[in-house]
Image (cartoon, rainbow, N blue to C red; front, side, top):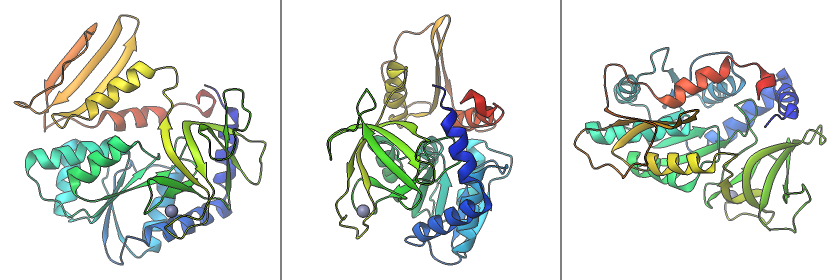
Length: 311
Ligand SMILES: [Zn+2]
């Protein structure tokens, strides 16, 4: 789906003034659970990316100690770094955090993680629960509906939902014809910058908007019952969810090619696996600690080389 408004929203979000405000906003949220001098592991390629810069600066503003993973993104390097640095918080893409939690359990590596910040999405319940249980920690989500250029909200600490950053962004809930639904009803989420309300961006989720004062004390609108819309690929997304849910599967890659379904699974040997669908190409291989790195990371790198017109 081509949404040119996304590029313009990102441009608005990347002015120096907007970046400063985003850093303050993130700092306020991080302060709820990060303490001074805590070590925060940042699982991002250190590149010129607005969200990475905002998160790093917000961590610094909390007087925390940021630890960048560097260029080596292999699973074992992520685990070793989390362990040896005794990081109390890890910030990274949801599927990478989920994989790390499975790997830590599998290897019996005790981590000191108390909080994780899933950057990039108000993630679905199964993913949040998987990370929480795997790492025995609190999982927060940073609402970044695009490819990381805007920070539009943050997890509510009490209720399963996301508070919108409403000094900067507005949200409409609409039906299939882009018409507003009645208050409190579910529908598609459309985000717009308050400075340019004509720049409407369909986030790709369904949710309800709760405008009441929240039990956490926050008065900003809250997205609840968030459900990711499987845009064009419902079958593949559901398969991905059901496979990632298994603790025996560290990672998986699912593609629908001209030959049909192509599946690649990285598994922990000797563990029970789910029944797999028939596929044109099926690779199930044991985790290789020497070389394997997250598919999500590889996809992310690929995306960065695409021009904005491709989004
Ligand atoms: Zn709340």
